[in-house]
Length: 105
Image 1 (spheres, rainbow, N blue to C red):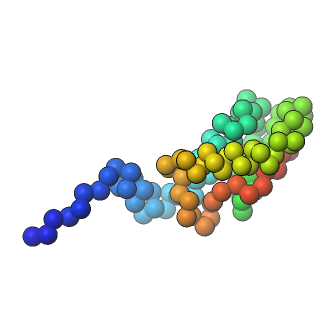
Image 2 (tube, rainbow, N blue to C red):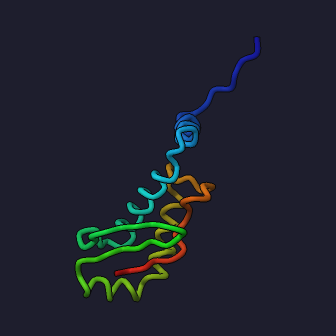
Image 3 (cartoon, one colour):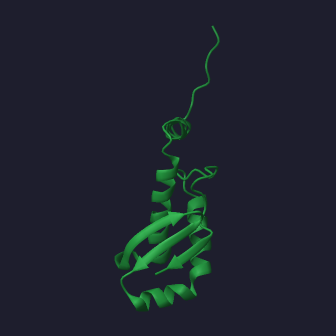
């Protein structure tokens, strides 16, 4: 009888997430968490929406929106670096991948 290779918990969780087709929702949630961490504007964030590589953020303060608009490219890079180091973020999902553009409203 051949012995099966033991799988780590990371591999088992990753296989479960892919088999249950939860990657798109989980990736979207991780992108929102990366926004909160990278921007520090979580208290001012009213709405979040992600589609086709674009992250749409509605802010309650025009002052915060203006300051963050100057840092948009740096925020995208910082969010993507946070996502690259995140173990739960599925990098090969074609529906929800890295942030390409940040749109502040």
